[in-house]
Length: 251
Image (cartoon, rainbow, N blue to C red; front, top):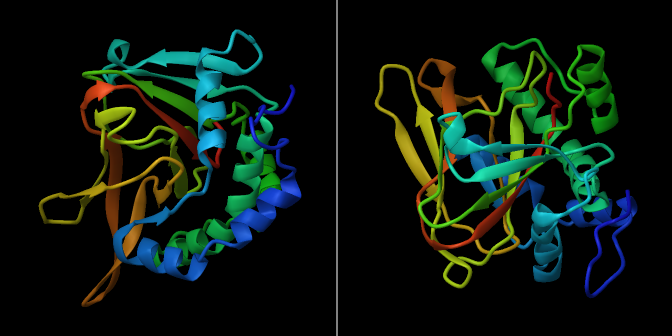
């Protein structure tokens, strides 16, 4: 499959994605993830890149996506999304491979704190090989599209036995210009406590890294496990596109 056409520059090579990922303040991102279960990576994509990825949603190329899901048919909310096929578009594959090595140490820290024996390898290719050996062979990066009145119910993206505990969502549209409403929402359920909700403000090109399923929280008697869910509030006007980068594959 050809690379995503970018209006102002040629498609980035993987080494350039590695450099872009390395420039992120991962110390600050890790601290935010430890404290609140999410971290914003400002301006991970430029406006031209966002527009190029969003345009893929209407692609007539049958090889770009493997499936389309209309949320209301399944009780997931309103709106729709499409899962990319392998081979992934170069931008999507580059992001997935470049971000993973910075997130794997955090994921391993979390599992250690929660008493979970699973450890994640340093390279994404090695983790994907683990998924594929277990029958999880379908790619999970996806492109979501919302219109007026659409929303995404609170959920967790669990697709099989092997789950990487962090994922990334990148807002491709500009709030206030392209759409209103449609805020990214996280909830956290602590044992014997009411759920805590958090709205994460994003601009076009911003990414949010967040917990897929659960994360450790430090208590007076040591760390304990909290359940996390994420969704999108009701869109009031316009159109909103999001790129979701999930690091495990599906059965």
